[in-house]
Length: 359
Image (cartoon, helix red, strand yellow):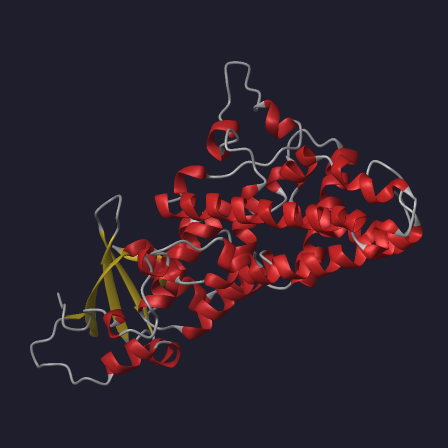
């Protein structure tokens, strides 16, 4: 069966693949120059001389690929209709983007892979300042969602979903997005499953977490290793929070604390741990640092004096930078690199068995 959109009469090669669902053979007729220009693997393959008995289809060489027809379509779509590649945010749960990334990685199509990675890195910040801006945008989206009271769309639909991003990063070696994705996932209630919450009941109503503006995740996409990494990160972040609290409280035992009589050196123990657990350790440090810097409100349950605010704020700024720098290591467990399930793009194992598999 000729593909309806990607079988060009002036194409110089015909690619064939089997559709994973219909089991039909789908034919794509494209230009060899396009394949060679974008893919190192196709460039090497197409320089090989074809044997005299090599099959043809309508006068063009016929090459059967071991990939699915859907994967070939995603690759060819990116070649001939790049608008989606350059102007649409990559959804790591989308079969199209997974197929495109599979082909880009396997056939070393650097242009497609680089654009997909860039889109993901735009969604998942890699620096502390990017993360602060990212959180500000999320707050804006939430406030806009509340203001509009749009029953047809949920806040959860406006922000990227972390579990599918982690699965994508593991499968296709995009480690740069893992720290932010793991941290975001840590703040989502495990009871809030993405699919379950969107499943309509007898009343055709979505579940209350979505209506309440809560986040959900595709928990079933995580591996056992991912769950271990998530738990390890949670424990390490909590230890950093307790370390901050302890160091601030210890002011009362220092010469600084003994020389002053204000009660704020005792106020740190009143910090609401539940807020930190649900809103995030990094958010807590940002909140403390910001309120200490502009004097907009107390960082703790008891009003602190200005010298204490400055000291606490400086310590919070230092700690948030330290935590961000450690984030990748926090969500790493033994055997992490060996168990990700991705193929190293620089490995010779990437070279696919194509060109020799002719119909």
